[in-house]
Length: 101
Image (cartoon, rainbow, N blue to C red; front, side, top):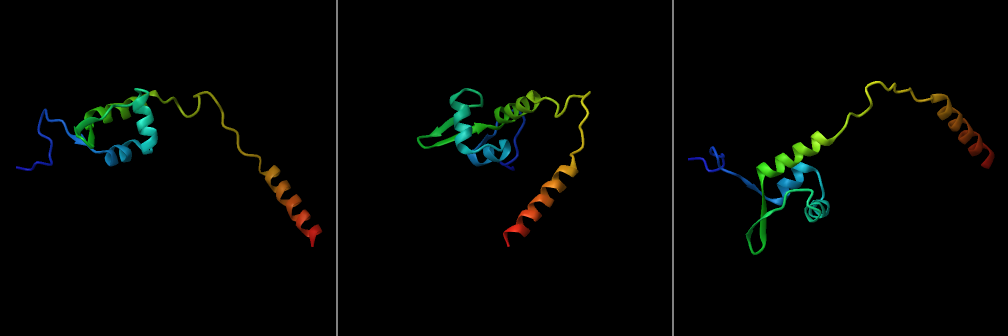
């Protein structure tokens, strides 16, 4: 029997390295979120070991994704960058370098 595969109804506990890899937070930020009750709390396994229920972590990540809004409003128009300004800055910079020599 393969013990690594989750059987139906079984919950898997994951350690902090995997939680951090899944959510993309630093350890300090994760523990700050736990203290503020905005992320799932760990389960104490022993005196010095904790783990998180994988289902809780995945639900928390899904809820964070659901909270995000669209990158841009649907009716807004993104304007192109004005390259003339950048070329003017570069020309001014080149002129200043030439005067200092």
